[in-house]
Image (cartoon, rainbow, N blue to C red; front, side):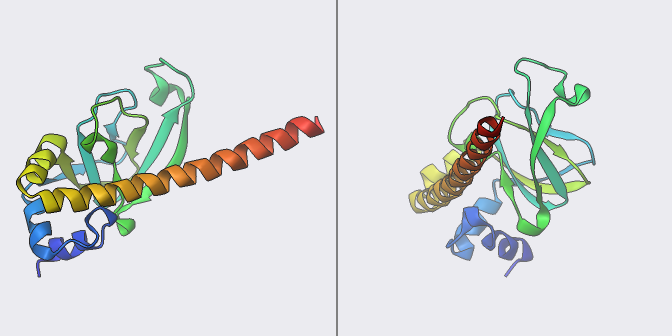
Length: 169
């Protein structure tokens, strides 16, 4: 089995896909590289691409001030998480579902190698192979659900801490 296909089988987005189905996906993935400190996506831009990290580390940051185009330079961003190639992390996946503005910026911390998948390419493959499209969308739903659950847990922790601080003040 091809090492790229074997690597993709370990990614949550492609969980429970047969190697031949992953081979179909390989045709629409494009290997891209980003240099350390390069901005991969900017909060507020319209997105149509999802990324899978093969090697390297990125950080995801959100603007603390609305409508400030200079946030990267002014340091008014809050880094929420780092993702790396060891996890074969996926980001930008919502772009496969909708064409809305990016909700965060992503910056390469180190030199990175990734696969990118364009929305139109994914939709074409999903239309040609309904089972493949269904499986990927089901896995995508699981990824999004897990992230929402973590965000809910973080919100409860933050509001509880704020409530305690306000009560003690």
